[in-house]
Every structure is written in structure tokens, then in C-alpha cells.
Length: 497
Ligand SMILES: [Ca+2]
Image (cartoon, rainbow, N blue to C red; front, side):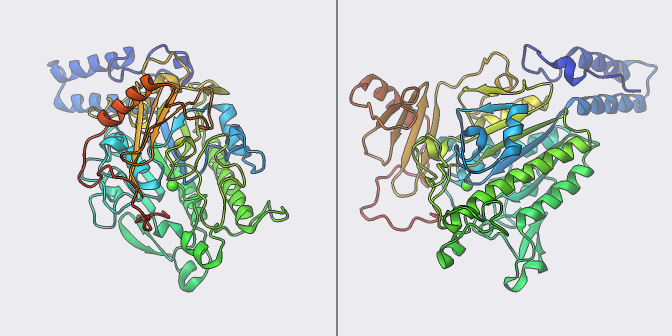
């Protein structure tokens, strides 16, 4: 019989990060296991039974992890981050019931590298995928799902992947996901009414959308899958990655019609005196918020609220594509810049985390962290050993509102469309170089969150420090040389992904 285990509530206020295999109760089970393995009265079968008991006990303490990543959602797009017009009541509630982070950063300023950073725990200075192109994750690179899968988790992905085409090493099934449905290719993911998707590596026809019909909105399909998955996912901890495409533009539709913000209805904004794409964009965000509410309802209905860590974030800043302008709804909030920029609007994103009984409700944290920290943070939450050889730090203690012990000396990004852009965050300072050989811009984000006052000339000491980071934080990669802007920039490959 399995003994009653430490409950969630009794762990509240724990003063240290988890030490997965050395808690008192695990030591107890380890003793049972040791006796089972060595005592003459126990046969091998008993040893196996004891091991199974330990495994089962560990699994019962591991939280479910539900990670929702929106696509091109800006820092200012949610009510709880200051949005005034677009309604996001469910995400605002999630923030009230959990924690909201005000200085959390995406892995990159566009999709593919940001998602690669999420899966590998390495920032763009140490990535093979430093831009939007077709290269896949290599075997063993996608640690996030793989480590959780090895650590007794059932793993699933519904939505957009973008880190490996069919048959490549990067396919989700080869990167730790037991089950997945969705888009492999980022351009394919622009289509909100796809006539085909992939299902565990196999092509999956959607006749509802064949011959130009618009019978099934992809987001609704992902929600059906999510509902079904959660109904049957109650017997082993799960890691569910919902990589939604809202509110990304359908760029091809945008070029053809001027309105690439593809959604079945612009309600509840139909009567607003806004341009049609802006109404659609607002409706996409509110629909996404509605779906977050539905996911939370399912967790409550299946009594999974208290043992599920829910995280919501975005892969990069807002776009001005598909007929919208990011400034129309102030999607970057008080920040400068949008997707593809190294200014804050391109990379600083919302992060909301709820874990009832573990994360204090209503908390707002200004701690600096980024996509590459999610991997070790989540393996800590999952009571698994931390991966080594990555750039990420576990922010487990900050996530739970405990005194932070891990703190980055700096954060680093690079991006190579047009000229090579580099940026580093060091405390309150932010240094940006917009092309190789260009002048470093320096901003003090504490006094100048909008990056309007370049103080590089006044602070050569800080400039020198940032310059050193821009050199040392990266490895040279022949595929990603640091280059100046071309004289007349050609349309960069993947420029609208
Ligand atoms: Ca994106």
C-alpha cells in the first residue's frame, strides 16, 4: 500500500528548492527499496514491487505542467499587463490566482529560435537555430519534453512546432513528445483553416477545409484535442505544451486581401470603429483568452487544479503584419519596438504562472529571467535532476515566491535578419547593437523603460561591460556570422514568419 504522501499544502512555504531524491519520505522509500534489494527474505519480485512503489509515489508528487505559448502576443496585449481595449478576463484571473512576471523575456524576437531556446535551455548565442529557417533540432537537443518524459511524465503537444519537418530529427515524436497534433512548418501554421495537419508524424487530412472551405478553425481543433487529452490524463503526471498560433497573422491572406487576421468572427468587437484587421486581432486575443478559460474549467472539473502548474507566455513581441499595426492597440505597452526588434517590445513578453497552494496568489515579480530558464525551472518543479550544459538557471524559488538565489549576471540575444542584431541585459542596463560594426546603444530601463534616451556617450564604463558580453556570450557559427546591414536589404528569408 502506498503511504499518504506529502500534500501540496504542507509544502507551502518550503524554504528551499526541491532536492528530488533526498526528501524524508523518499529516503524512507529508498530504505525500503534497499532492504528489498539486499535482504535475504526478499526475492527479486519483491524488489521490483518496491521499485514500482517508489516510482508510483514519486509520480504522485510531480505536478502536471501545462504550458501555453501564444504566437506574437505583445507585452501590452493582456488586461493584466495594461491593455485597455482588448478583453482578457480569464488570463487576468489567472494572474490574480497566480503570479505575473514583469521582466520575463522570450528566447528570440521571432518564432523558431525562440522555440528552440525553450526546448534546449540554451540562448541564441549558443543555438544552432538563430533565425527563422527550416533546420531541425538534432537528436537529443530537445531536452524539455525528453527529460520530463524520462521522468515519468506523459508528454503531448497540440499546435505549432516549427523545429523540424516531416521525417527529420526535429519531429516532436523524436524530441520527447509521446503525442502531438499540429503544424510542423511555420508558414503552414499561417493557415487557420488547414486542409491537412500532422498527427504523430503522419499526414492528417482535414476534409472540412478542403477546396477552400472554412469548416474547422485550427484553434478550435486544438481545443477539442486538449479537452479529450485532459479527460484521460489523470493517471500519470502530464506535460502538455499548447503552442497556439493566435494572434499570428496569416501573412499570405494578408497580402491577398489586406486582412490576414483570420478568425471566424470579429465578435465581440464587431461594432467598434476600428479597421477590420484590428477588430479581428482583438477578437483573436479574446478568443485565445476564452480558450484559456476553458482549459482552466476542465482542470477544475477534473479536480486537477491544485496539482497542475499552468504557465502562459508568448514566443516574441507583437507584429505589424496581416494589415494590423502593433501600435493601434498599444500591443507593446510602454515598450519600444515589436517583433524582429531587439528593443524591449520585441523580446519582453508576458508570463503568468498559477499553481494553487504553491505560488502565492496575486504576486508580481520583477525578477529577470527568460525562456532558457524554463527548462531547469520545470525540471525542478517535476522533482527531476537539473540538466547540465545549458544556459538556463532554475527560477524555481522565484516562481514560488521564495527568496531568489539564482540570478543571471546578464541575459543575451542575437538575431540575423538584415544586419546582425545583438542585445544584452545587465541589471537595469540594456545594450543593443543593430548591426555588426554599428554603435552600441545603451538604455537604463529602470528610468527609461521605453528606451528613448541613449546614454552610451555618458556611460563608457557600462558600454565597455556590455561590449565584453556581446563578445563572450556567443559562440561563432559559420551559419550565423555577425554581419552589417546590406546596402539595400533584400526580403530576408522567413521575414514574415
Ligand atoms: Ca512568433
